[in-house]
Length: 216
Length: 216
Image 1: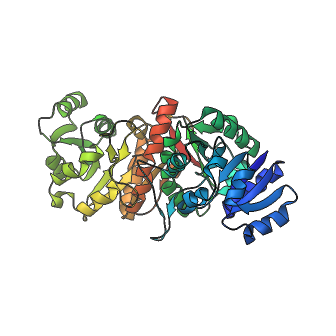
Image 2: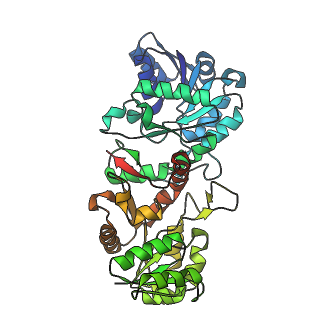
Image 3: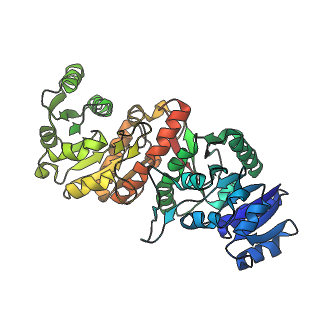
């Protein structure tokens, strides 16, 4: 599958790397078509990897990942043409973290709205699925690095899109019964608002290699 | 120990009942000293149970539980005298849920503040410990009703108070290593902001009998 990964940071590189390893063709998108981090990633990743602007990656991908920093996600996405996102699945991995007041960050949008909803409103014809934003990127693409069962969450308005994301996440190594569908895109509030707990736990455990399991 | 439980709802009744069963003397506090729910609870609970106003329960207890609805917690506590809370441990179980816009509720205070912090600021001489607000009340007092390991969290500024709460929670049935100290009272933001995820999970699982385990 042709996939556009927007964002050249650690999350984008990790997701893009996993997608190439799984046999997908991946274009990494960034503000500048000559982005140095993307260039290094392409050089290290073989012929299935390419780079371009956000807009070019949005054209390229049949499916898109938003791996930009949450504070800049809407700007990054708006540099693409709305038509190029229409009817495409957009997996929103970002969290709207505000680091401007120091650590731990607060959230830029919260409570009665979420970044996932903002993106869905900005691109009403895209199929936004919030996913993977409750774990660090190493765990996103390799759930087995944490022993035992642990869970991730989906939120989105389009059931077929969520099923496709579920299939893709299973190819990442996530067991079907560890992927919990929380409902429509407003459930992005729930997973984004989990971040303060994740950040506190990271501080306490001194590692990002953890996740939660829903026990019933 | 003499314990004041502020609040006559399901959470207050469940906590107060557990405390009586464990051999504590418990006064249930409410707006009115003649509160009907408190009267029924006292009648059913034997000679260790009593009722009074919020102010009377605050005087009575060597340790206090805030089990009032979060939206009214500050008003309820302010009807007690500040001196009667001074130097006492106040376990804040409440969540600042706003049901005024329908379900699911949002939070009345969020992101850069929390109910736990508001209470600590209102009563600077009390030792506020945020705890148990991430599970339903049946699970609070009977963790074994959910099979397997699962975790709860502490937040508060006073380490000795957190140790005392940890001991009390162990008497409720919580294993020492399933009680995670998240740090100072600002960590109440993290556990209160987890509520939207708890509420979505409750909707999805169709039960409140669940919890999360931190897997590492």
